Image (cartoon, rainbow, N blue to C red; front, side, top):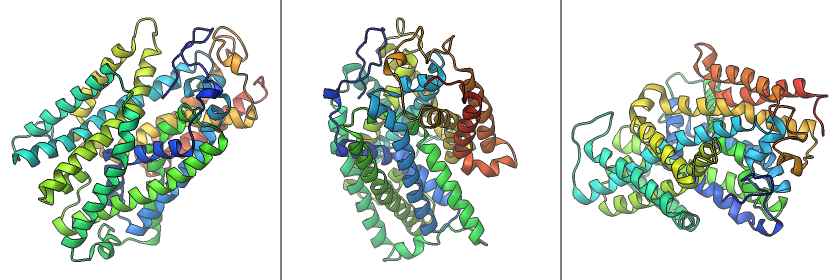
Length: 471
């Protein structure tokens, strides 16, 4: 999805040509259709619904509000990409410096590596479901929370990812377009099954089944805020590098309409289905289940299990390659372009994914999905705030594209390639935003971690850089 041709400066992130700006609004819409409906996305929504003990309507409203906020934020971060045809690592040079931009680029790559490993694990649960449905094998001794079938499925999925990137990924975009709608079809089918098994009580019970005893308006509000904040952290990576996609939009209208149609629609539909299936599983089976493959397995329908397994597997693998694998590989290769090839970086990424995905179940039982997501979001948040303060408040949306590609001089070189104001702002803001997730007492603000990091990063940078920026 990104251009890798070289320009005269030797840079491998060249601006695209007007002829390459071919994406209409539906292409942007489809990014969100695929990005939102992963198995991890479902599990995150379900875990938030259960963890914060809010009513169904409060959780649903929080997810919609989060979607609308993300839409506004990606319109802001994607504007420069659409206008100048530049990707995220190049845009970062304006605020961080031609060398300093490597820091946010590698941070984005590290986050992508984590997500890649996690999504490999979640895709493997779909394959494990398929194996159990076809063979009838269940149970067995567990190692790090997974049975022998689980580990077999995990290694097969891990190897499958390697085979795909090794042979080329030109088919992935078409594959995603086909798999995407089927995910919704399977989830709707699952809701219908659970509705029938609950004797039509699913909708009524979904409103209150996870509400904590003694809940008040303020506990509901606190849960609402925490869900919104965690979902912002979940989208923190794409908030940063949306210019990687927006630069292919035909025009600004295509980007805006695609985001407007894609984010609210998919968040509403996906969130509603996730909440209903999670509540339905609790009503019918008497337990809180956050992975839809486990719910499908309990329906005892071989046909539904096979269709769901194939669909969830296809959708998760596809979006994992596009949204996580490519950014992580590019970030790793960019550290030493002459020594680290695409395939070498891919193998490095896969190595990390093997460890991260293999330890995921034991890791998440210790820290929880929300803590994991909020930590990653808190780390990236200051970078977003700094970039937006630089582009909108200091530069008034004006960039010199030629200077962005001048790696030895120009206004974005800042003398030594690093913008000290941006580095200081990032360090200070990141300390506070990460503390909001992990420091006792302060971690009551974990739902605000992304907002704290972005606001502090932008404010500190604006104060330090004002009057020093050459527009």
